[in-house]
Length: 337
Image 1 (cartoon, one colour):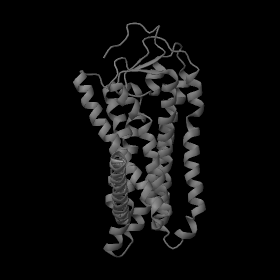
Image 2: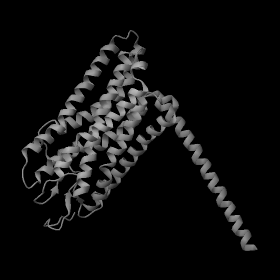
Image 3: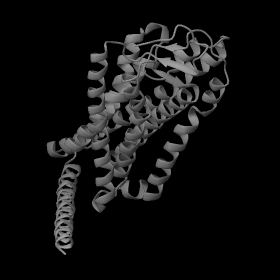
Image 4: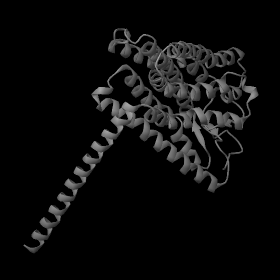
């Protein structure tokens, strides 16, 4: 990797990413490309299946479809630029590109936290208030909750990103990360702003602590209700219903709390990259497998959707083949004439 000796001619920041040999960068490019394609395929399949299957038009699956679409946006905010950096020599990201990545990455992360809380609330109502669930979690309430998650998530970091984008940056402008993270960005400012640093250090952990506490409280009530179920089959069904969501919560919230719930000085650059990689790449990759494998309705709908897709592709190929053969015979006939 070639890093300029001076930054007078640099119109952005340098994301070091994962330094290494050219062969190593190509290997990482292949690995992350595969992970990105699998993430897009898995989450897009869930979104399409919920939209296609009328039986899945329930609050739980509507929230899941929005969550899967969110995961597609989440990985797209970082991985494409990361892939470009693997094949680039200078690894420069423009100022506007860096601030946009910062805003969308953290806004989508905040939106994901809100969605996890709403999904926990939905499971609480379904298990603890099963008879009242249809009247409590109506389609209108579900739609309002979905819109609220998106709006709150994208408003959460709006003012901070406007403030930091107006600041001046000095020094090498080298960020030892694969994305534009607030800690290394603030370290590069010409004038230290302790108030801004406190704001940033509070914006990440505070909502996470509140939302994770809400989620854990919801599941504590769910577990209490589940243990009161007299039949073992009923308990297994209840655990199966909320087990996949709880697994996603532990994967995402656990890694994010480790990353932003403690002072940034305690994390080395390598550890920051690994933890960020886990909740920004690995978790969205695992989510489709967790949800599709643990939910019987989702597995059945996916199988039907794949069979339908197979038939559609077969019909399209047959039509293309027939058209090619027709054009071939037409050309032969015209040439003879």
